[in-house]
Amino acid sequence: MDMIYTHFLRLAASEPLSLKPGEPVRITIENLSSVLCCTPRNVKFILRKLEEQHFIQWKPGRGRGHHSELTLLQSLNDALEFNFTALLSKGKLKEAIELIGSVKIDDLMREKLMATLHQQMGFRSYTETASGQDTLRILRSRQLGDLDPVSVYTAFETYLLGQVCSTLITYDADTDTFLPALAHTWECNSDHREWIFYLRKGVRFHDGRVMTSQDVQASLQRLFETNCSSLWLYRDIKQTDVISDHCIRFVLHHANRFFLHLFSCIRMTILPANHDSNQTLVGTGPFQITEMSEEVIKLTAFDAYYGIRPHLDQVHIWFLPEPASHDGYYDLPGTDRLSLPGSNHETPHYIDYPALGCQYMLFNFHAPGCHHQLSFRQAMRIIYDPVTLVNDLGKNRITPSSSFLPWKSAARHWKSASLDDAQTLLKQSGYQGEPYLLSYKKNKDSDVAEWLQQRARQIGLKIELEPFDDYLDVVKTSDAPLILREEILEDDWQYGMIHFFKNQSNTLHEYITPEIQSIFDDVLDEFPRLPHSARTELLEQAEGLLRENGWMLYGCHMNKKAELHQSIYGMQTSEFGFLDISKLWIKNP
Image 1 (cartoon, helix red, strand yellow):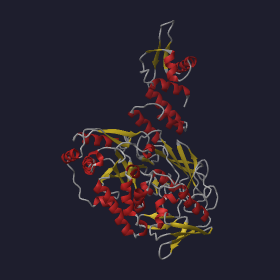
Image 2 (cartoon, helix red, strand yellow):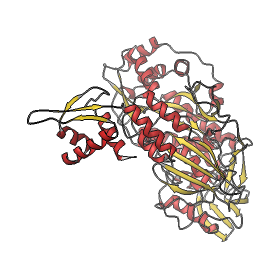
Image 3 (cartoon, one colour):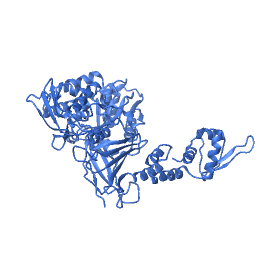
Image 4 (cartoon, helix red, strand yellow):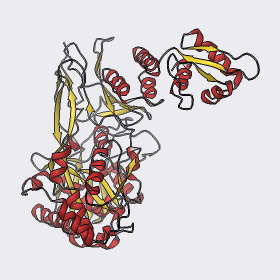
C-alpha cells in the first residue's frame, strides 16, 4: 500500500482524534506523532505530503499556546475505496485483502469492498501461450488451519488435504463401497486378521520420488510416534510387513471388519517416508502446493498424477483477515456473469449441498454449576429447541436434529416445546440466578447465541456470551459451562461418528468427564470387530446415551452454499460437501 494512503487512513480512522471531513480540529504535533507512530519531525514531512495530494488542509499554530488545525478533505471510506480499487487494478490482491483488515470499516463499506473483491475471484484464463492457463480463485473467510494429516481437525483443511494427498483406497458414499486409489487391489484372510494391499507402480510424489510400501509403513508409524488422537482405531495392528516395494501386509491381534475404513480416512494419508512437518506438504494428489502463506495457498495441477489430471491448471485460495461471509465463492466472472447479492442486477445462482452432521450444544462438566443436574440440561433442551431454532432463525439451518445423521432426524415426529416446562425444570435444578457463560463461534453462531440468550431470559436464566474472535480458537478449551459447536462428518459416516466418540482431542472429550468417556468406551469397544449393521446399532446406542442423559443437545442440520457461474461444469461434491475442484472445468467462449 502507498505509504501516503497508510498515513491518511491512520489519521481518518483514529478514534482519539475523531476527525470528520470538512471539520477543522485543533490538534498538536505530539497527538499526531502518537497516531502516525513517528517522530515530530517526520510528522511535519507527512503532513506536507498529505496536503500536496489534497488529503488534508493543515494550518500550523503560530507561537506558544496556539494550536494547529487539521481538516480532512476526504472521508475514510472514499480514500479506502479508491486505494482498494487501485490495488486490485494493479493485480495486488494480497495488499487489497490486507487493507480490508487494516482499519475499522463500517458494515456497508465492508460489503461494498467485499463485492468488489468477489469480482476478482473465480475463473481467469491466461492465453499468453498456445495452451493457456486456467486459474480458479476462491475466497475463504478465515485463515488456513493445520494441514498435517495426523492432527487436522477442521472440515475445509481435511478436504484440502484430499486434493493434495492420497490414501490407499477411497470410500464411495453412493455405493457404500471402497475404490482403488494408491492401492489397485487388496485382500484379507477369512478371519479378517490379515490384510494385504497391492500398490500401483510408478506413482510419484510431487517432489518426483516414486511411492513405495516403505512410505505406507512410515505413514502408519507416524500415527504412533505422534500419539495421534485417532490411535484407538489402529490398536489392532500387530505388525506391518513390507513384502516388496508394491506389496504391504498388516497382521492384526483381532478380527477387524472396519479395517478398510481406516485406510481410506485422512489420518492414513500417504506421505513420503522422510516427511518433514516443517516443510511444505508433499503428496501424490491431483494438485501440488506451489505457494503457501497466511494470505494465500496456491495449488497447481500435478501433471504426473496417477489418476486423471485436473482440468484446472491452478487454484488460488485467498484468506480474509477476519470472518466476513461463510458462503464459498467459486463464481466465475464473464460477460454473462451472475450478479452479487445486494446488487441491482439479476439474482445469483446458488448450489446447496447439505453436509452430514449438525450444530449442537455441549456442557462443560469440568466447570461447576447446575448443569451437572439433569433437570437443568432438560431445561436447556427446551430453550435450545430444534424446531423453534429452525423456524425462528432459518437461513442455512434446514431441519431440526436428533442425530448427526439427517435421515435419523427425519424419522422423528417433531413438535415445539413449551418454555413453561423449562422454567419448572430450571427451578428443580437449584438454579439461583447466577449468570451462565455460553461459548460460541463469533459471526457464524452469533445469531444463535443471542436467540438462546433471549429465550433463556424469558424463564429467568441469565446467559452471558463468550464469542471466539478467531475461528481457530475453537480448539482452545473454554471455561464456559455451555458450549455451542458444529460437527461435520465425513462421507464415510460410520468412520466420522466413531471418530467423534473416540477422538481424544475433539470438543466432546474436552468437556466430558472420564466417567462418561468410560461409558462410551464400554459400549463401543467391540465396534471394529462387528459387521456393518451391528456397528450401526452401537452408534445408535451411543447417540441414545447423549440424548437420554442430556450430555449433548442436538440442534439442527446445516446446509452449505456456493455461488456459481453458468459456465462451470463437472460440479461434484467432495468430502464434507465441498466442491471437488479436481473435477471442475470451464466452458470457455
